[in-house]
Image 1 (cartoon, rainbow, N blue to C red):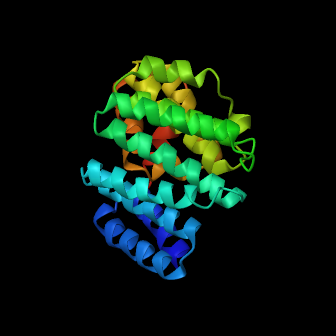
Image 2: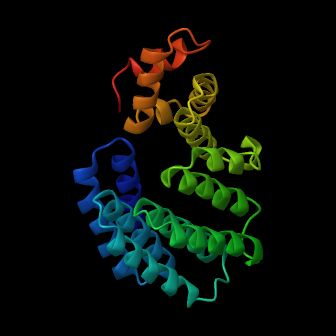
Length: 236
């Protein structure tokens, strides 16, 4: 039940139905607590923290995530599920600090996550690229698209095993290229995202906005008609 509510929270948040996503996250926390499973509790804490961050309650969001981190740390992180969720919470907490404009704690947090990705035996080979993509986004949120794109030089799409993660990789690149004022590279990244997961461009409001602005401001850029066609269909 907790996993179902977490999935619903993520989906509602992605497509911009945030008022409904928040009580859904609360339900995820409720059922996870009943399970008394550390991984479920931590995953639900991440979902709730994400929604608190969206509401602008970043201090509370970070505190909720910290409780999840501590709960998982107490397990010893002997299983892949425990270690993976631990990494996800560390990354999400660092990203939350970036949203709050707390550069020092955001960068300290992502260093901690990268260290965990490299030194916890249960981590899979995909853990470092996962944390590194969060670093890219942290620099983007902190207003430094140049550093975000520098971080991206260490990453390749083949590092990400699922279409969803590869789609997110390309939309994260598109956001940074757009902020950097590079419409051609933005278009290329959006086209790659459409190849992986069309919904990443069509259904996410923030990415739809970039695609819309790209079409409006740079209609002559090669390939721009494809994102325009994708977003012409109703979102969601």
